Length: 54
Figure 1 (cartoon, helix red, strand yellow):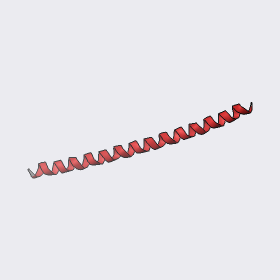
Figure 2 (cartoon, rainbow, N blue to C red; figure 1 turned 90 degrees about the horizontal axis):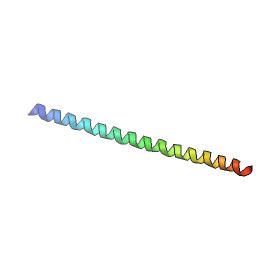
Figure 3 (cartoon, rainbow, N blue to C red; figure 1 turned 180 degrees about the vertical axis):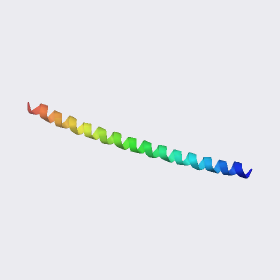
């Protein structure tokens, strides 16, 4: 019984760590996507300004 409890606690700790890692990865991916969208917006604005001058 003691071994089962210890294994259960280890598994719980492992799963919590995996969950936290997954959340962090998702947040980082969202941040990178937001930066990419912002950069593409700036490029679009620059191209629009160039096109308007011609």
